[in-house]
Image 1 (tube, helix red, strand yellow):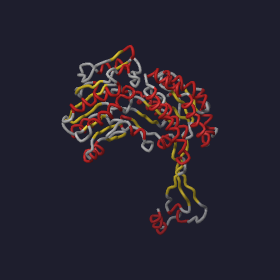
Image 2 (tube, rainbow, N blue to C red):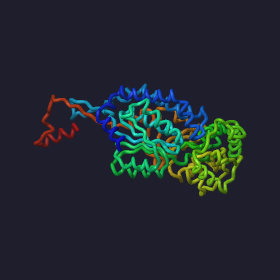
Image 3 (cartoon, helix red, strand yellow):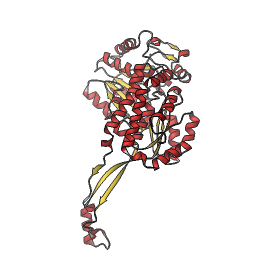
Image 4 (cartoon, helix red, strand yellow):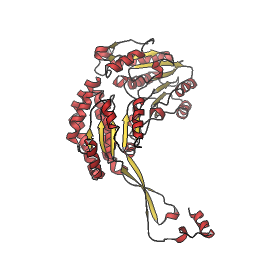
Amino acid sequence: MKAIDTLRQTFASGLTRDVNWRLQQLAGLAAMLEERQQDFCSALQQDLGKGHAEAWATEVGYTLKDIQLTRKNLKKWLRPRKVGTPVVAKPGHSKLVLEPLGCVLVFGAWNYPLQLSLSPVVAAVAAGNTVLLKPSEVSPATSAMLAKWLPEYVDDNALKVVEGDAEVATQLLQHRFDHIFYTGGGEVGKVVMRAAADYLTPVTLELGGKSPVIVTAHCDIQVAAKRVAWGKWINAGQTCIAPDYVLVDSAVAEPFKQALVQAIEAFYGTEPQRSKDYGRIVNARHFNRLKGLLQDQQIINQQDYDRRELYMAPMLIDNPSRQSAIMQDEIFGPLLPICPVANLDAAIQAIRSLPKPLACYAFTQDSHEQARIETEISCGSLCFNDTLVFMLNPELPFGGVGSSGMGRYHGEFGVRTFSHEKPVMVRSFKFDVSLRYPPFSKKKLNWLKKLM
């Protein structure tokens, strides 16, 4: 493929190793988002029904913040890290040097089609790689904007955009890359990993899973409900770390349900379909999938949807069967099961019976309960007494564990993901002690044992 050949030639030229060049590309990405933000917000409205405030906060503004942080700290992150040197190798010194991997492939995701396309690109470019970006065809308006504007703001010989469907993605995977970064579902993640294995290409897979919420009796129910509602219904629930289901202590289950209903109305009014802050389902296929999950379920609040607008209201599902599809599959939409449990033991057992989630949320002020949850639940990220906000901390990496993904990024962690941390040792020609050289005597061996 010509685009890949160009990217390889650019990397081979050494252009991308220049830190100032990398900073220029990051500045170009920032300029694009600042100058074309209205175009991108319009595209996000077209693809997902995102209101301007949500589009700016979760996509444009979030990515701008990521770029600003990277530009400010990149030179510091790239400094060689000194490490110790054993006596037997002295005089000399050792260090770890970050070097770029080469040409990398980034698959964007449709649910946050700007952020989840550009954030990996920011990290890859900052690390000194050339990048082929394939945005998701499920969000075509945003994909088209990226294809149109990126070449105007960055070096087109170092960062290219290829649009297309699954067939195009399959063709790309037939080529060798130095790293593949994929955000999306687990089944496609397996396809990516299989293709990467043919070339022994390292991969980062940001997948998903059923991110649980634990609500114990030891919390502020009203605040907990607002924070769960906020995290769940951003982007109409189409967020990989959105609360997927709630395990609530039966002692506070009813007040928590009522508080959730009140929070939904406070956020989106009695008719969320009319709210400028409430999004839409991405396409008819996902709408039909979500509607299928409602079959035979008891809805706590109003059941409301409109296929013509791809609108589906925030809906609370009352204590569904653990064997039902809604409790087995990732929901990825505006449906939230509320499951009363007897105690924290039951909640932990329920979570551990499912694959490890990308995120876990727990609402409790009890330090003993917090310690148990932190110790006994394995997940990509753990957040107490809130949802999603850990994503705002660039000092925390983001990534999954087990079936929810592998690898991590954000801030310095992203730069390291797209780099090889190369060990370097520098020796002196002085004091070339013969102790290491044959022939070996018993005395020499004893000294070697002491020095090594």
